[in-house]
Structures are given as structure tokens and as C-alpha cells.
Image (tube, rainbow, N blue to C red; front, side, top):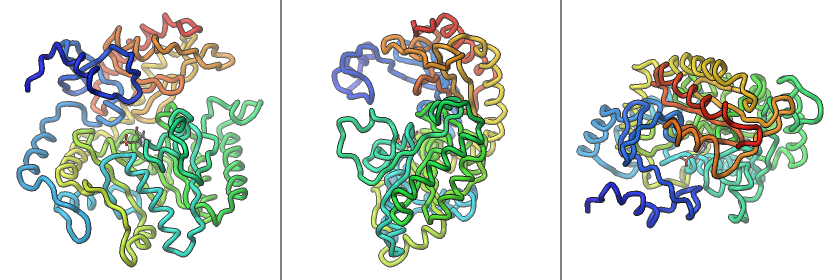
Length: 451
Ligand code: PLP
């Protein structure tokens, strides 16, 4: 069946349930092709991708090298299971590579098909690890408000937005949410303005109190995004994660880093764990591991955890696509590209350039409260009043990111009153400037009422 390009939008409306799109919405943007940071839709309109698809297109669109690798692997061995004693050379190759990139002692790898599956696996691993060690009471998971850990019932319960829970209850019991680190919004921590170190003091005190309330012997793990993405690119104070790690260590609680967004170069390191100088017990990754060319996730698991999981009959959960040969082959080729093209250093350099460009073009606008970034994760927080930092009212039909796309073709996302950017790491400086100019064109006309 060949579809007429003119019918695509109508057929989409008739047949596809899109996440987060009401049935009443008529607009569709049907992407047809991509190259570098540019995309073209079914109407022939061009776009500049400043979101990296959904925060993952590290090496950019249209890399035929990756298509060639997928083709060759599919022709040789498209799939066989990785359950039990079965394995394949591509999965072994990737696991060996990941073990060499990850901080010691995270040299074991558990494959999934994406980030949500990864967080389900991590939460189950944490509980199972304690169970196997004779501490079955350790069932609680500490998480944070404004966290996003995907849409499974474990990770979804750890997610800290009411929207993701409403109507899906009962969520998983034994999850407790802490206050997120968000130094721009010190009203979260009381009436007085606080320094970043004082923000950490507050959060560490809260963590200690929560552990005492639940009982350390009842807590399996704390899960957190090193930098909260969906929450609005919230960058914690530099001492936050080292101090959290120290508290958790004291109480035998595992630390799970959800690096589904932050891994594979986005923050200028292979993993944000390296950026913050902290070694978690488990790192969950997905997205950038293949730059989105095929679905894949990988957990990097500490040897001390793996040793316990592998005892007796082993770890009793597996996904059909665990260690998929085509996905792992593409991932290895993608990591090769990231390395060969120096994209870690590029994320740091280009991220600083884009940040400076945003500052120069938007920094003085009345609706811009804060511009923050680490590497190629950037956010522009929108306010009604720069002095009070009151959030900008948002109108669903005129969301700034929609207006920017419709008027300029530049694609950014909104996240909790911030415009968030996570462009491909191969973006040029001219394209980065084009992104900043597009934001300025719309934001300089935006009234404090959000109109
Ligand atoms: N964790 C984080 C931090 C994410 O940002 C996402 C997706 O955006 C997920 C988990 C879920 O990953 P997936 O959509 O691949 O299931």
C-alpha cells in the first residue's frame, strides 16, 4: 500500500494514539527525512532540530554509516535470544565497550529496549539485591518531585509529577518523594534566599530525616536523574550528589542514576556521574546509546551488585530484545562516531557557545528568568516578573515552543515553564545562533501575561 502524502495527516488522526495529544487536536507534523540537525516534513517544510528528537540524536539525523551497520548485521544475524547461555558477538562487543567507558566498578551490563524498561529493571535489581543478601525489608525507593523515570509502574511511581499518576492508581507502594534541587527556586526551601550550598544543606537534612522516618533498613535505593530533564533541566549544586552518596552509603542504600538523557556525551562526559564525580551503584541509560537509530537501553551495574544478582539461579527477569544484535551493533557504531568526531568536547564547547548566544540575545528580556545549562542540556526559564520570579502563565493554544516552531521552524520543548534544548551534538555554531535568534523573535513579543 502506498500512501498519498496529502492524506498522511488525516490518516494519522484516524488511526494513531499520540502520547500527550488530545483527540481534538488537528495539527500534525509528519516528518519525512532528516540530515544533520535539519528535518523536512510531508509539506516540504524545513525544521531545525534543537531537541535532538527527544533528547537523543547525539550524532544527528541521516547518518548512513549507522544504516549500513544495521543492514549488515540484519543480513548476518537479525536476532537470537540472550536468555540463559545464549549470547551474540555484538552484545558482547558493546558490553565490553561500555564497561571500559563507565566508572569503576560498573563493569556489568544489562540490556533493555529503552529507558522505562531500564528503570523497571533497576528498581527490581535494587530490591532483589537486598532480598538476596537477606534484607527483604528493604523495599522503599526514594525519588524526587519533578523527576521523570518513564512510564512503567516502578519508574512511573518514582516519577514526581501528579500528571503521570492521576487516573493510573494505585501506583507502586513504598516510594517516597523528596524535594528536588532547584537553586533558582529557593522558595521551595523556605522564605529566605539561599546559596547553592545552603540548598544542599536543606536537601541533605530532608534526606536524613526521611531515612530516619522510613527506617534505613527498609530502603532499597534512591533513584535520581543527575540533572532533571523533564523537570526543566534542573542542575543541582556541585556538592549535592557527593553528599547524597555519602548519606546513602552510611545507610546501605543503593544509588541509581537515571542517565537516560545525560549519558553518552550530552553533558560533555560519557556519563553525568563523571561530571559530578560520583559513582552510583547502577546507571540506567538508553536514548543517546544509539542516537535513536534503533531502540536500546543498557544498565551499567556495579560489580558488587552484579555478583549478588548472579548467585544461585541468576537474575530472574529478561526482555525478549535483551542484547538485540542489530541494536547493539548500531550502538557500538554510534559510540565510535561520538568518539571519532570528538563529540564529548564538542558538547562542552558548543553548549557554552549556545548558552552565551542565548544570554546575549535573550538575557535582558522581561520574560526570561534564568538561562542554565550543562553541556548540551539547556533551559530558558520563563517568568512573569524577573524580580519575584513568578512563573509565566502558559496558554495551551499558544505555548511558546509551538509558536516558535510554527513561526520559525526551530523545534524546542517546554518543560515546567522552561524552554528546554538538547540539540544534536554535531550542531554548527551558525545553527546554534539561529536557534537563539528564533527564541528571541518570539520571546521579545511575549507579554508577562503569556500572550
Ligand atoms: N528516564 C528519563 C530521565 C527520561 O527522560 C526518559 C524519557 O524521556 C525515560 C527515563 C524513559 O525512557 P523511554 O521513553 O525510552 O522509555
